[in-house]
Length: 236
Image (cartoon, rainbow, N blue to C red; front, side, top):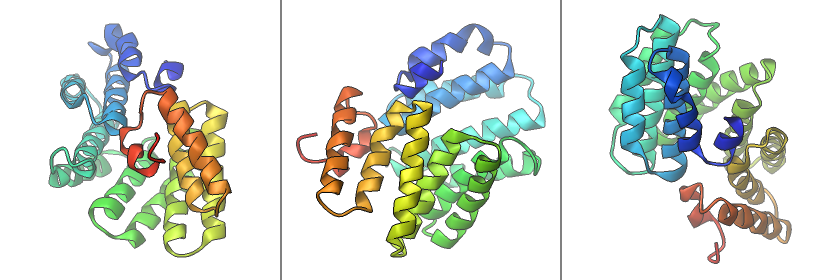
């Protein structure tokens, strides 16, 4: 399943869960997570993701599972808003708020929730200070729990804030760590964005080399993630 997900084959990965997802909340939630992630990377499949979320929410869930479902619903609404499909910012805030109320402070899902609340603060709320605090909480937990995928995201977003603040060395380090984790875990679909981010912290000709490698991977994966196109050379 990870191999399919890491290569952007979210539908195929979700299909593997179909037999279990009808009755088992963990499988239903993971299936929804895959289809929500597809929306963020491709800006497609919104209806399928909504259906998967409703199916998961219809099962008999405990508070941890209800919190995880609310976190996914908030992220789906955030993605719709960020990618200008439909403004669902209020829904995103409400869902992430529900998740915060449902997930215990030591919940395994708390770090992901913190990260997503950071995304909302930065990209929807325009509050980089609140975003950094949320990213930092998520980052520390991800590193402590050796969650390489989430760590790759927190490294990248903290580095982006550092770059905005003019700290090029810190940004370069964070972007490099994000890329390293994605390469080590084989998260192929996430490597091109990591390369482009790292290029922002380097002068030419290194920046051009990094963008060229990102373009190669972008083409290899059929133009995913879609939102990356505007950040690549015109030949991408």
